[in-house]
Amino acid sequence: MPATSDTPKGHQISAADVAKVARLARLDIDENKIEKFTHQLSDMLSHFADIDTLDLTSVEPMTQAYPLSNVLRDDTEMPCLNREEVLAVAPAAEDGRFRVPPIIGLD
Image (cartoon, rainbow, N blue to C red; front, top):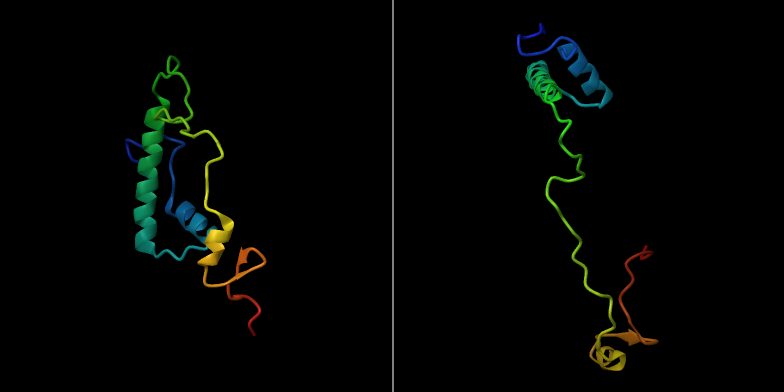
């Protein structure tokens, strides 16, 4: 695929490149899709080249675009249900635990 006027030299991608990457990724892509993906990838590389031309020396690096903070509660012990009361209403209990039917090794 020839370079377009908006694709800088060195940022070109060919249909052969797309086909090779698709083959390496074990993707079954037909010729129509290869041409479509070649055009899309070339457009993306062109956009990245536009970004590379920006003067970002005064922009502070960041790890995320939106400031997030973890909202965690204190890990405090709270009153809970009484084990005997809970097991008393369970369909089946054994040795202070719920008894459930086996799901492995039924063969």
